Image (cartoon, rainbow, N blue to C red; front, side, top):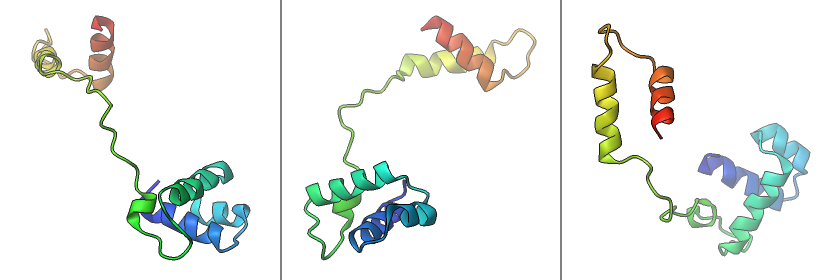
Length: 101
């Protein structure tokens, strides 16, 4: 969810709005609302001033990139090597690359 939506959820929930009304206004389910409020409190929100640091997602530094320079080069070659000189659809390219691992 956008940071503005998350801030709205936290503010509404902490000021007593029922979860059903918050869901109606924001489209965020009750379970996710509880998680957003919990995250804000764990990050130091004390009920007074809501800051971006209380809401923003943390960095995902441990995530590894699956795409390598070899992959990018291979993808470009696949597009160029169509035997009928036609563009391949993304679906076909994704299927071919999935088969190759």
